Length: 439
Image (cartoon, rainbow, N blue to C red; front, side, top):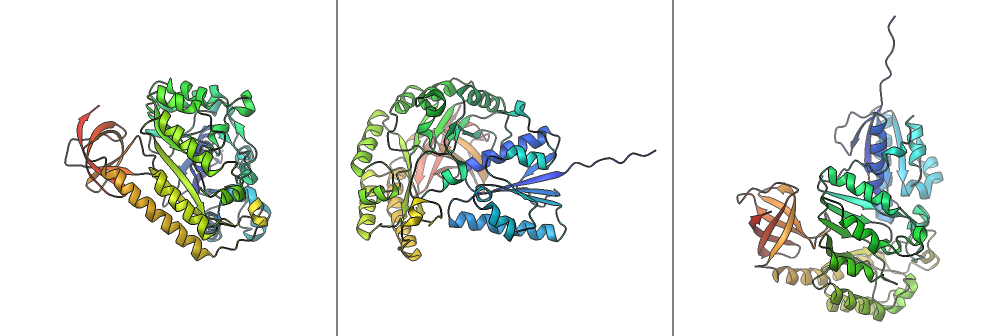
């Protein structure tokens, strides 16, 4: 008698939004593969019969991209191209009821902390023994390490606490175990991420323990660079800088979103810091870690931001001459404290302010890059593009920062390896160089 075999679903995962979402998708992939599923990530022309969309709900543009992606795959499902469509992540957490009504083709919506429920819907077990054994979707030589979830800050413009909840730190031993597993697979660079890095440990250990975590991760064999993203400036724990100075594995790089420089706007944003305090902190950081590369983010168009306040921000950027700057335009998000204020600044004014700020930063970046001509930098190489090997220095994080271009006609460079590169030319956001010796 013949028996009918049960065919396993094939799953394709689509990730939208930030690196924290990417880590969540990687964890879902790991769990599904642990249950013998065939899983792909953003595979084109996929033959998967199940699609999981991990959404972003941070600002209007991100929300629209998530909705458009869901609708696209809902149409694919209606046409018979896939059997099941599931949605998870921040947009799903925040607007689940509305989405269920508006897009009934989706089989189920799950929130940011509902991976076990999503797995159960696919008849997969949540395997606790797989915690720390994460498959990665980035290039193998670098990986994001999410050290905490959620945020206890009360910034007026930010909806993250509505979607991610209160701050929850991951234990140090769990993070070290994950780092060791990543290192065994060839990861050389860890990018530490969280909604708020500097709060790490307060819930678990009753003290800020990011410096201790950094020292412990720096001891992991095979990890050569550790990079810090998303530090909050108010009550910044200066011990982080001591660890950075003492351990060569910790990059002289800090991503510290400042958001603004006008006291009136900082107060409206509920940032718990003044312009003077910010300037003092930046001076201390640069004194303790000479040559540090500072990445920051500013938000323009917040309710109450006058033209004078914006001009003050522009002057602040000129004076501080940050190595890296990102700009967002204010998005009026329901449920946030700023939503109670009038969103009185027109969209075209927000866009114009963002453009003007980036023009200032472009000139700063050009001058800083030109000053590097003739210097030699340790560089890690990510890919080949056209006639160039594309790499990054200690001052550069993947995807958001500057890149180093080295002609492929020179010495061969193995991707994922480090090489010493002498800079020969510079543009606003790119450096050109030549290998002087391989490590």
